[in-house]
Image 1 (tube, rainbow, N blue to C red):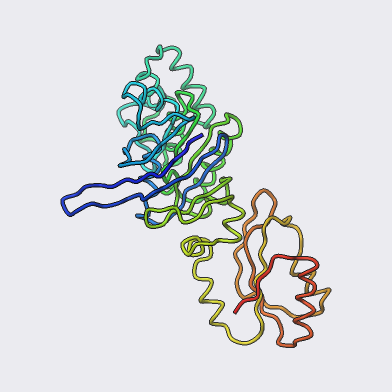
Image 2 (cartoon, rainbow, N blue to C red):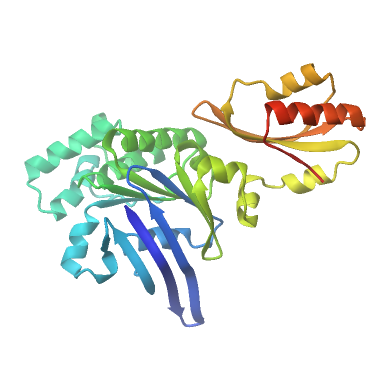
Length: 330
């Protein structure tokens, strides 16, 4: 378990102090995929680098399995870091080394014998689907292949934790999907706890169990992905999850508007179709943003209903009986 307690990070520059993180507290549970999302400059990359003390916090605590990294002697800290792998947006591969030797590199630093290091590297390259590219050099690989090598290298020392700093931001959508599927597989097969830093909602809703939303150096909101997505409490969470929706709906005049909120119904359940058929009303979809997560629907649909009061009350009654989560829009 990784625990961040009252963490603050201030950078001292020639133009004055810059506070990148302010009184941040959160807990990453064992075995989960934990997402941290925010706009550029919010502090998310600084936060993940503080988790293994690549950036040393100005104050606060960073506890890994109950031990505070801030108070560890350097030798003990270096050993603890072997249990925390990290991958980056820019891959950070060694261009003069081939794929196999890139994966072996952290094992060489740890003093693992060459034969054992090679065996481990081959095993990991098979896991990430690159067993046939052992002798290739980074310049000969695609972006997705480079990130797979970086993932294999990060797993070389059998870490319990894997920190991913914008690991898919430089990749195209199809490659992103394959990398996310690989991270999910690593989490499930190896039991590695994963922390994902991203500004992309699709990354969070596809693989994360819980999410923290960071805004202006502070945690604005935290909780299960399904809860944050369906009931965002903070302004920044609403902005990230429902971009541009409020103005586009409010500008449409006439009729009554309701927002149906999906918080885990089976994705095959025809809520709107059943409502129209059973209530005998016409309804128009004004806006929608839904996601299928493990066969369940999360998100919302905004509907315009007739002005007729009887029809409107009929719909409200049906919703109260069959679909309790809704909100009347202003």
